[in-house]
Image 1 (cartoon, rainbow, N blue to C red):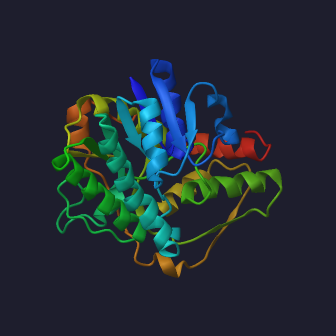
Image 2 (cartoon, rainbow, N blue to C red):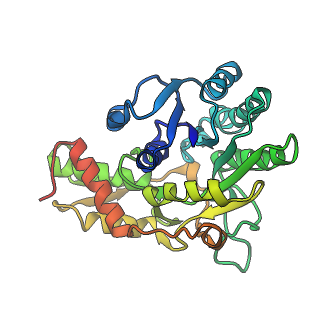
Image 3 (cartoon, one colour):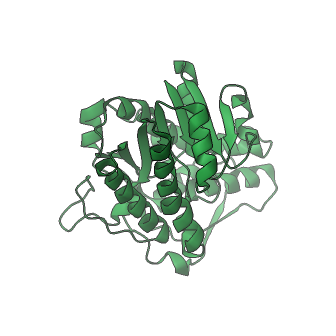
Length: 321
């Protein structure tokens, strides 16, 4: 297959490329820069990388004509729920407007790639009353500008399967963590602070926000393993949840990470007023994805946390004891 991936140099994009390279596909990427970031430098020469903004219609159309993909994975977008309260214009532009620009460019080229739109489980907000999990029929109740903009792009993706008839499958990822994730996200930030404390570059103190939220956590490497079978067997116009189906409080995740530390650390919480409206609990019902593709997560949470911490240890020049 000829596969074009938008947002290829991001957290999920890098892991997706690593999963696809051994399969022998012709891989192409669209990213904001023309070079791989340092943690992904090993991918240089394995992927044809193109620079461009997905909201730039002319550039996107040119890349589509050059690469002529059979599969198109749309990962590019604004991805920080907490900061989205402060950057709403950028969030809506990068998630909704850029998605529409991409689909319109596909239409203009006359190409017919199978498209995988990568959405988020946060579009649901809380489960419906009387339900413990969110399935694909759960009412959409986004609680952040990020979730609202992704919900709009998710609905837009469905609309484009109806008219003008693009071949789009949607996957709604619940929370994913793993090596190379930005410290803008809770678990990676815990790992960064522990690694820095072990290296002696910061005091043995972890500063954190609210720890009461519960999240359905899956290793990013398991998440990207769902993409090829969904592209092969997913139905156009359908949405599929991807998640473990188990929830952990952020406090639980922090405690598990602290248990892996080689120094004793203190936890200090600070309030985050802009996050008060955020979703308290997310838990996936991923039976539809499992029944369609056979996908199940295989990497344990403990392994994911250890790998994430070791990745930050390498970044700070320390090693496991």
